[in-house]
Length: 109
Length: 114
Image (cartoon, rainbow over all chains, first blue to last red; front, side, top):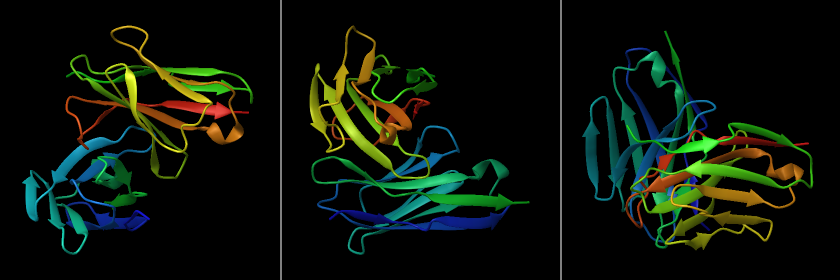
């Protein structure tokens, strides 16, 4: 079966750095995506990795290791508005997006 | 900035009733999707649509569900006879490219079936 695992919840302090991990087992791989979802709102696209390595976009970076089936999202200089769920999703061999359950990130002052 | 819009934002209906959820995708996008998210659970794929026909559909998308693009702008999801377990947030999404995971989501329509 297809599976994406990420922690259910994480807590971090404003101004700090947090790393949200994601591991996946899917039938094929055509890219890994991170989305941010504030409570009661739609997911919004954050990042895309298809090759191994780190992609940096401002305060957010995403890393991929295809051989390990592993990715992480790194958030720096955390702000209160970063409190949200972060969804890891993989595009499988049929170009279907397989979604993780999301990691709820709680930022404390 | 162009966005995907959905109506209604919230609909309450009785079990067995028909529901139509409406979406206006981003105007130059060609690929359209419906997803649902039961409260506290994963985002689940329902259906994708391109060139006026269904491209893919999931096991969830059974005979009770249908999609339509009645004109050049709207993309609708119909549930013929709602069940309690259809209560969820329904998200419409669109993309400009095929076979991409970069989707633009609408704000969602919350469906409550009583």
